[in-house]
Image (cartoon, rainbow, N blue to C red; front, side, top):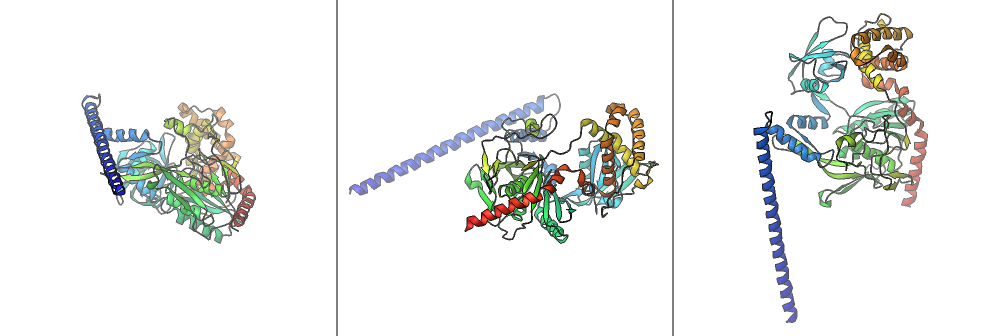
Length: 549
C-alpha cells in the first residue's frame, strides 16, 4: 500500500515537473518570438529611415544584402553571402566549369589583356592571343574597365554571343571577334609531367572541385605509365573546396584505417565525424608535398593527413590556416550563403584554423607577413601533437612544413617593370616587331607543344633592344616612376622574365612552368628531399606493422 502511494507521488511529481518544463519552454519560446518581432520592427524601421532620408537614393536589395553581409562578417572571415549572379558562378565553378569565352586575362599597363586563350574554347578557336588588349565588349568601350568587370562581361549565358574588340601589337586597326559563349572546363590539376627520370609531378592548384579526385587518379596512372617511381605533389596556391574530394585524394596515399580528418561541430548531432582511409591498395611510392600561404582548407586536410601519418615530407611555407567547414545554403530568389558549421582537425588532433579573434579581416588576411614579405609562423605553441613516428607538430595555425623554404620574391619596382614596359616589349617581340629576334614571332598558342631544351634563349642583343625600348617607354610614361637606373639594376630579372612571358605567349602558362622548373627553389628542394621522405614513410609503415602484431 505504501509502495503504491509512493509510486503515485512520484508519478504526480513527474507530471508536475513535465508540466512545469512545458510552461517554461513555452514561456521561453514566447519571449524569444517577442524579441525577434522587436528586432524585425527595428530592422524594417531602420531600413525605411535610410531609404527616405539618406543623401543618396538607396534600394531595398542593396540594404538587405549589406545587412546580411554584416551579420556574417561578425561571425568569422569565411561565412559569406552571394547574390544570385555570384552564387550561380560559385556553384558553377564548384563543378569545375563556367560559361564564357575561355581565356585568362590580366590587368597590365593601363588595360586588360589576354594572357592565354584556353585549348578547345571559343577564345582559342577564334584566334585570340597573348597581348591582345580588350577595348570593347558587345559594343561597349571597355578600355577603362578593371579586370573583374571585363571578366563579368565576357561570361554569360550558355550559347549567347560575345563580340570582342582587341588592340593587337603589329596590327594597325582593331581586331573584331565574335564568339558564342560555351561551357569552359576548369580542371583542378594544372600540371602533369616528369621532372626527371623516375620523378613525377602533379600540380593541384585550382581547388578541390567535383572532378578533382578523378583527375588525380588519372594523373597518377599517366605518370606511372611514364616510369614514375616517386612524386612531388604541388598544393601551392590551392584554396580548398569540397571535403569529400580531399578525403578521396588522401585515401589514395594512406593505409586502410588511417584517419584522414575529424570534423567537430557545435553539437555532435550536427555532424561530428572521423573519416578514415578505406582504399586498402594505396600508392606507396615516396612523395613530397609542396604548400605555401595560399594552400587552404581541403589542401590543408590532405597535407595534414600525409604529415601526421609520416607518409611524406612537407616542403615550402606555412599554409593559410583555414579549418572551418562551410555549409552551402541556397536562399529563395537564387541567392545563397556559405555558413561555418564545424571545424577541421588533423589525424593527430591539430586544429587547422588560424586565430581570427581580432575581428579584422585585413589583419586576418595579412598579419602572417613580415616587413620583407616572407611568411611568419604566428601560432600558439601550446597545442603540441605528435606524428605516427613521434615527430612534434603544432596546431592552431595551418600546416607548418617539415622543410621551410621561402620562395623567390620580386620587389615593387620589379613588379612595375614587368607589368608595364617589359610586358609591352614582349607583345612587340612576339608580334615580330623587334628586328634582332624575328624568330620570336608567334601567331598564337601552340597547345600541344612538347618542350625542348634551350628554346627562346635571351641574347645580349635582345637585351640591348629591350633597354632601348624601355628608354622610350619611360619617356612616354613618367607617371610609373621608372628610371633607366632602375632598369639597369634589374636587367637580370628582366632577362628571366622576358623568357617567361615569351614561353607563355608561345605555349601557355602551364607549359611555361614546366620549362622553367630550374628556377623554382621550393620545387628543387622537394626533389632533393625524396630520399628522406622515402625513409620516413618506411619507418612509419614498420611501426604500423609492429603495432598490429
